[in-house]
Length: 298
Image (cartoon, rainbow, N blue to C red; front, side):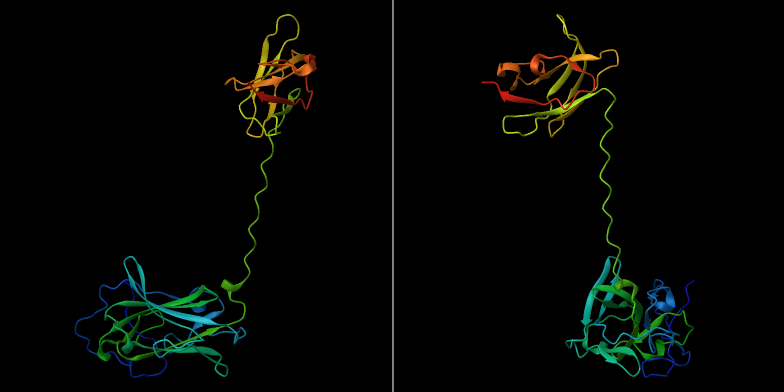
């Protein structure tokens, strides 16, 4: 069972019950657990709600008179929180403006509930933002008359009388957690290039404009009268390739071939043929870079 009710106040205000009254039907029997987030309730360590909405906290930080807070009030429902009003330090809204109190070291705005079409037995969230970031919030429930208020402990639910003025007071100190400069995101380290096998032949295959050609088959063949393919690889999107060559073949020919027969290799003596070895010469394992330029077949 969550603790019930009420506005925990240090002073007996017209809209706050100071004694337990005969309430008749209890409007809070089925309400969800209400919440408060500030330094006294495991929130930002430099933000405090103050009486009469909360008990008087203990604090030791330096008051931030230069803060420009905003206060928003919304009605909680099953799908979110519907906005009711927003207060600032620069403009009046529904009779309320946030004012700094240098002597008391707090901020203050009055919520005139009689200026809104509010529902009783409904939970409203009072949120405080600084620089667009929420630094704390407080849930309250509206009741329709003074007799339904109860005095309670520090963790009890806060209730307000609909139609009355609710003073919202809070303290902001220097060093708000939400205002600290976040650590800049660290750029992930670039992926390590794949290891090149020992003895592999590498290079790049491009078209006549220098653009890399993807999907070109690069093969290693045995030299001599009969050329046998001993390994093959495909060029990547940038035209690069890594052609592994088995240890058993210290000397090979390299062939570039477009399986779609769109390009042909420019070989030795600049004679275009469908495939050929680079410069017609035998290459040693590990040679590179061995590049090729392919031209469209006319």
